[in-house]
Length: 219
Image (cartoon, helix red, strand yellow):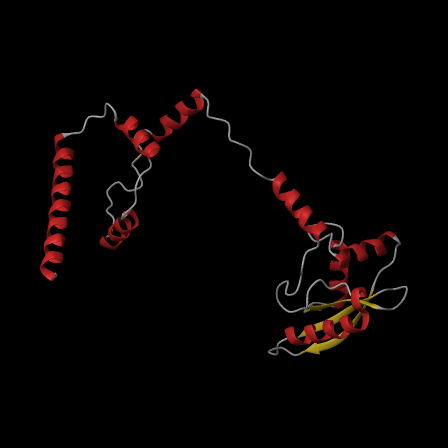
């Protein structure tokens, strides 16, 4: 069973928040009080209100609004009660959303967005320091003799086709070409590798000639 409940101000008796729970009401109230001053939601209106009550040594009242039997949807029931008290109380109701799953209808204030932005910028990664020569040597020693991830394996024809399609029409920038040329400078290619490269180039050229002839035949 799901319970739709309301938190009431202990001083005025007004409803300030509508929620849902499947746990004991005393336990749910305790979790509200325990979490109002910690975590990322401490700046929400409901938690600010609860924190003020705690500082006054006060505890909100909790009251059952409606019980939803198992198997029935509680979302429209919660949304109906929130809409009811929103119409009656306006901003006095501290729910940030219209109810149901997720933050539907919630719009963060400019102050909240600024805090989120500042928090994200504070967590931005700093440029990583380059490895020392000693660390590089340790990494090289660890990797020496270790087979590569594709050693003894071959890509499937489907994977090869996807890789070829992804490369189709791609042009390398001049800076990229220069870097590749620098890396390959002085690198000796074995006769076997030369033969494989030559066979691939010849096959590609033959394929292009065949495609050209086919287009000419159609016209």
